[in-house]
Image 1 (cartoon, rainbow, N blue to C red):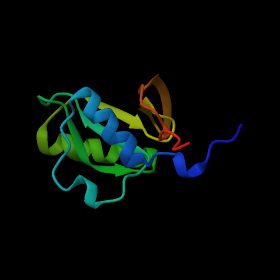
Image 2 (image 1 turned 135 degrees about the vertical axis):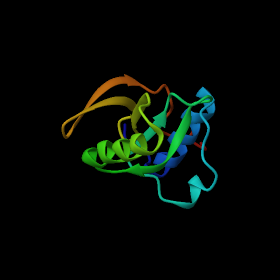
Image 3 (image 1 turned 180 degrees about the vertical axis):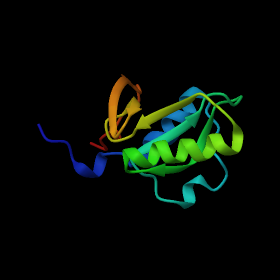
Image 4 (image 1 turned 135 degrees about the horizontal axis):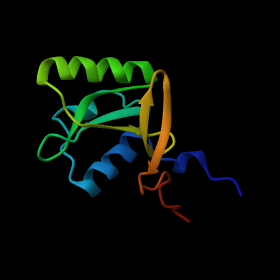
Length: 111
C-alpha cells in the first residue's frame, strides 16, 4: 500500500513535533529558513536548545559544531537525521543511526 506523498510531514514539522515532545527550545525566527536533513541540539543548555542552522550534508554538521564550540566552549550535542527520523552519530563523513525519534513521519489521513 502506497502512502500519499502529500501526507508526508516536512523536516520542519517533524523537528517541531520532536522539540515539542521533549521540551527543546526553538530559537526565534527558526521557521523563516528552510529546514534541512540534519538538525543539531545543544544538550548542555537548560532547557536543551535547537541550533539555528540545519544542513543537508554530514560534513557541514561537524563544521557547525566546531564553530559553535569555538564560540561557546565544549558542549554535548545531539544530531538528528530528519529524513530517517532518528538520532545519529557523526564520524568522518558518515552518519550512523542510533535510535528512532518516536515521531510520526506522516500526517493523519483526512479519509
